[in-house]
Length: 176
Image (cartoon, rainbow, N blue to C red; front, side):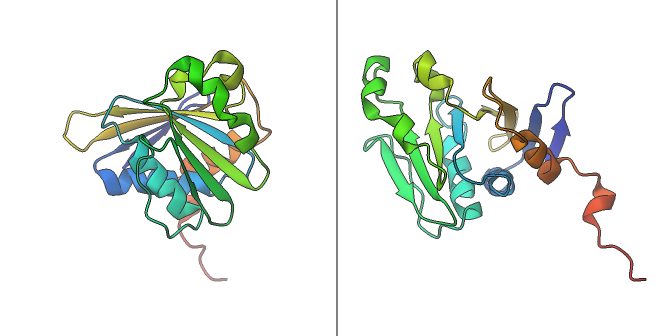
């Protein structure tokens, strides 16, 4: 896994397999406190549901995570609830009827696959946009994590701390 922190505040992670993609999401979950809405973008097979699997694990859920593309929504319990929404099969006009804004709560995280299908008024509710792209190898992925126009205090700072610490800070301190 390779992680880069850009000057514009975007965190880019390059993973080599699904387990690393899950690990990225689990690490990111440590920065989430509840009340965040994550928009997940990427083509079919880019790893959006795999990302949510890691997110659920990092939030403390032991439930199996599957794509909600036919049922639209799943909920997972952990240290905070995780609402997993998939907009793939919905027309943009029907997204307004879901009441997604009601799922953004202090004790929950909302992860929305195919977030590009959100109407603009709902896109403004997103805390983070996570773009997933297939890499050169079959299982390689590129994940770009960026804050949206809505600033959630120190969320990106917490995420950057989880991902972009110099390696020397990750090592154990020598005993005195």
